[in-house]
Image (tube, rainbow, N blue to C red; front, top):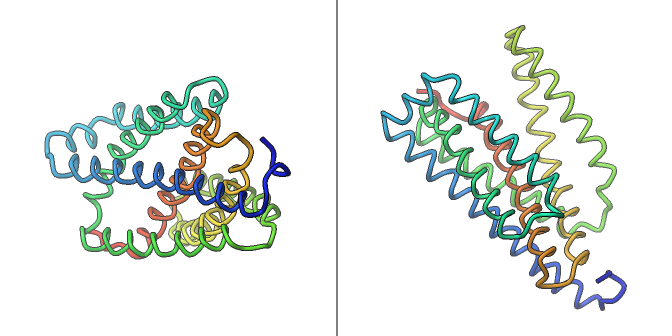
Length: 231
């Protein structure tokens, strides 16, 4: 069903309902990730297994990448239920790998950084939702900047430059703050692409949730570098 078939009031209602589904999925994913990360970090045998077994740790990371890749590549062919299971599985795996963060930083700084991240994310997401400005041009610039951050991170893995480390960190924060607004607007526009209540609409909400989930997690980890207190 296309946008031109709706009145402005109907469009606003559909967009609000769709974004509610997106945020519900995203919040659920974050909750799963956080709870699993805390549980693993408080279970010595589990955290020791993850930290000391490099094959397992990198296997978890590869598993996360494969799940996201599969979900995005097959979203038009799998069911909404399968997409939901994959998203939930990804959030759970991410909780296992992020449990290491709970060992490196104090609980107080993790909590305070989470609230800073949540506030920043909320402001930019609200801006992306309500602004009349077309943020499409942001997407191209931010994508190029993200590629630059990734390449610089790989280079600094070998160089171990503290100055480059902080440049990457602040640039990354800028990128994901911008992506939060851009992705929110993009997801909002997706809301009228499919019939309300359809299988495709449900899958679209899950894809949108994954996009915002990734923005939130990456922003949180970058801000934690800046604001977090190491143990």
